[in-house]
Image 1 (cartoon, rainbow, N blue to C red):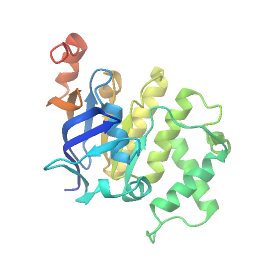
Image 2 (tube, rainbow, N blue to C red; image 1 turned 60 degrees about the vertical axis):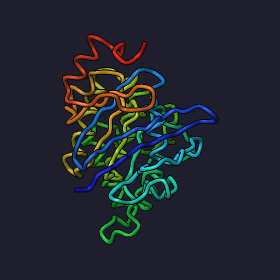
Image 3 (cartoon, rainbow, N blue to C red; image 1 turned 180 degrees about the vertical axis):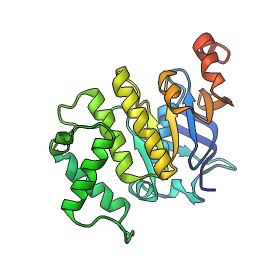
Length: 252
């Protein structure tokens, strides 16, 4: 079984420890959620997994960050993406002048460069992209515009899910993808994520503050993260408990 494994991960920025012995294991096809108070290190985990150079991984005994048995810490961000790791950004970047279709085609070519069954012709890729956009309730006209240029918050988040569908990742990290979405956009995004999981058996790590997206995704496991480490794991009943009691059990 393919899996994403994090063991005894310690990370700092300057002299501040952000992740403090974090452990996590996500198998293909599973949905895990991470919840925690502000400053717990949730987004730091996402960025470190994708190779953000602003964070320093502290060498520790027994430390491991692997995907399908391959050491992620030895790979640069592009290599991690080509291997099949995907991050949906909390605040997607706007790149004026780079058309969405062009960006997604180049990302697709890099991800599947060694795949004999990849779509080679631009026209065929356009048709494929439009069909995916329609499945995800995305207006195909957005594909002609600059990447996230003057997009609404909902359009940006939908586009992240379209990118995820195009790249068919082995594992995907959704960093507060639900933030700022109205109920219709949330349903569309959640339905898109579920479609991708069903079609590609993608393992998904959802970082969120809110219960609502988890009601649609039905996570297999929920982790509570406080002070840079997982302090409790369980099923979705943890979410209901957090809604009532918050994090005061772990935060003084």
